[in-house]
Image (cartoon, rainbow, N blue to C red; front, side):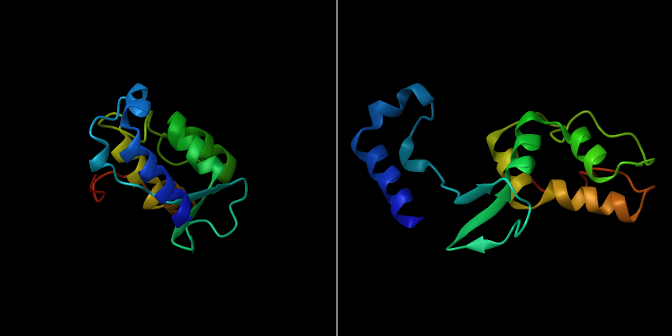
Length: 129
């Protein structure tokens, strides 16, 4: 994992103009996040050689902002409060997306709703972005 990250950092340093189409600005200030995205939920949010293992389902739900899909698939008879329209109430950003994935936000909120059907789903009060 580390060799791949080093290769990307080297390319960014040596050929910054190749990355201008990504519109990422000053590449020297980039932060890298090591993730293993897999099709299974087994070993989710465990570290392997410093990389966080996450499920493809979680990443796709977070990228598409489709929290309602997760509630229906994990809690088929969910009768709690209505699911919010967005897991990004302040708007989507890369920073918030990373925070939602790396803090296990989606699964934690879903499991909390499963334990307490009348609990508010996707409470944002305690999360710092």
